[in-house]
Image (cartoon, rainbow, N blue to C red; front, top):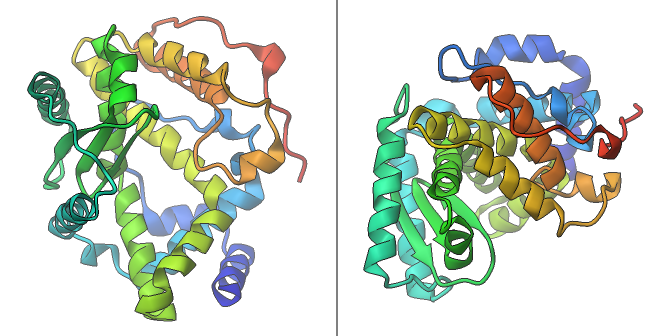
Length: 294
């Protein structure tokens, strides 16, 4: 583990952000839509050191396991295997509600049809009997808890943004990087230790993933807007979630894989205003996060 971590540091010191951007090329984005991550600069994940470490990790990952090896078909197969395993293990309890399932299927299909440059990943959406407000995805398999669905019950636009966010994780290559991590961990540490090492690596670089979460937010918002739904409902959702969170802490921020909800709402507000010329309220500058001093 220390060997891998020191490799990240060495690569970060030897390679500039601009050089790494040249190696990886431009990210996939819908035409005429800008993606700004400046709103994360006030969080730990937005610091120059952490951004460079994250890009260094990408470089090591790509040198060790080619992105070309993680095809859409491979991702889809991992998703199917994952879904089968969690059902057999009983970890997830799938809800048997035909009405809601039909709604989820409709939302998924409309969002998939709205993609600008669609992948060949096979998607499916599932309702889970769970009281936690949550949604997640792996290999094209999307899971929405009943508690999350209830949050969206009064405004379907939010459901489109949430499902669109999960699609974004696959379409923007985030799941591919997770699979590269898994392959790399298995190769370096052996199959028996790969899972624990992967978890440690995720913990050490948790704040880097905040950018991916925001990128997926933007992707879902873009699709939702293209379908004619009110994207400001997503801003209202994250403001509501922020009321249940602790006050900002840089220590907690480092170990978070998701941006703080208040910051998330501010980022989406700015994205919607810039790209869709729509105001979703005023960004609360009095509660802005402190700048990280490097």
